[in-house]
Length: 388
Image (tube, rainbow, N blue to C red; front, side, top):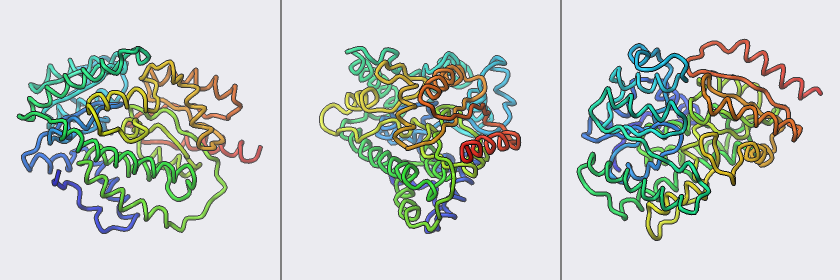
């Protein structure tokens, strides 16, 4: 893809790149997507958590990460019940208020509310609204083949929207782009684990999340530009607690909340926008690309509360994240009304108690604007560990 939609970061120092990334993320009119459409291109929106974006990319369309927004659900509220997480309502609000214009929408059965989102979305728009049925039994010997066939079904719908077939070679070219993107993101996270004073979780979040709003080739260029700037930063190490942040797999915390957390501690690992980093190693290019994508999702991936895999018990995986990043504590949070997230908090805190790791439990909502009380609590928690 030779289309550029986000040029303002180019030739900027790190501070300028971060500023431009925040400007783009906070603009709920999605100017990058508008620029893409102005060039006659099509857009496929996909809901959290993981989506095989390579399939849409190979068709020449933009895979757009739908992650809600900090706006009032004026139109969407009437389409949902009261006791649901905010991200569902604000995601639909973006479309109903014509801030984003899609050619297709895909959601996943990660929870009851997300599963029903395709039907609600489909009642309001004429374009296809699909559910991608990721395996509920990841341990079955037939799971990879099942998911490969589900990806093929999705590809056929994508082809109808694109107006042409998607060849295996086109898929492989896209897999090269996304392999590179994930490798760059993993490199940035390695810096966070080893030298967290060089890049805060707030900064890494800005640099990572814009990738879901622009062509991935352009995101790769941005990351190639900023990673050397991060490595040569002159920031000095401070006396802060090393922390794992757990609970940002679907609905996203406000940027100011992440900034506040970054001022209180070193977040050395997290699950923010984990779908963009779900695959842990390069996906092989040889053989059937759809099968390779399916196998990578099941066999070479991280974890989240919305994937049920007996080989990856969530509490055990969290402890491995804590150990692997040499974290001294954990922030265990969840979006309000998020059933999977709030449910896992029980198992997480029990496991952290058993392991002897201090933890801070909280909730958030994407529309939060005041963090004073939470900041005091978090600073008190950190000071208790520092001076224990």
